[in-house]
Image (cartoon, rainbow, N blue to C red; front, top):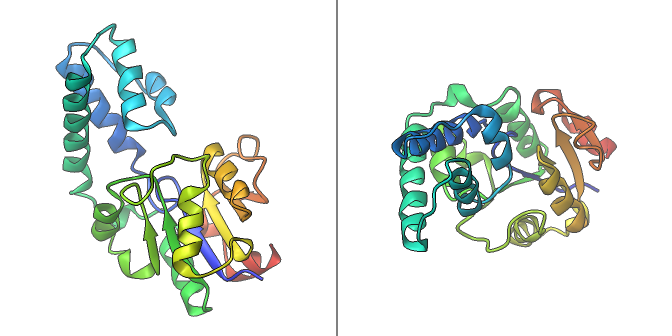
Amino acid sequence: MIKACIFDLDGVIVDTAKYHYIAWKDLAHEMNFDFTEKDNERLKGVSRMASLDILLEIGHINKTPQEKERLAAKKNENYRSYILKMTPDEILPGAAAFLKECRDNKIATALGSASKNAMTILSRLQLTQLFDVIIDGTKTSKAKPDPEVFLKGAEALGISPTNCVVFEDAEAGIEAALAAGMKCVGIGNPKTLNKANFVIDGLHQMNIQHLYNL
């Protein structure tokens, strides 16, 4: 029986990918080269430091480890400057309504995100109160597809992984959910997310009955 829903943040609750892209593009411009949307595809699901390595490779630039740390921090400053202007209007369609429906039906809710800025984003979106538990990048050490973030979410909720459903938009996240022994709903392209139990376009297509059908 489903007792908990665990949600990824970016691409499920909100789309901050555009802000990551702009922040990386800002950094590239400071180093006098261009960073395109096509280049940005290589960064999806990749950690900040690994993303920086790709960016530097594109710009044919070498940096010391200390310089890389400074650049990564600068990118995060750029990114935070954008997300600090976010409003609840940026919540993806159906996300807030489904979170409320879960809570109305005594289904526990958790966030399972690698983002270290998750609390800032949820605060800006005025969604913090709709989550019983928030597990973000400040509480984990292993990146998806490692199941750590989802297992910590289940543990914090006090609910068995077998009674949890994860909502994810990335292949690595779906692999992490399945590795945790959880059911998984993919959000996005069915061809890309074919390992999920089923795939929807967004949370506007989700309701409690669909949840119980899992």
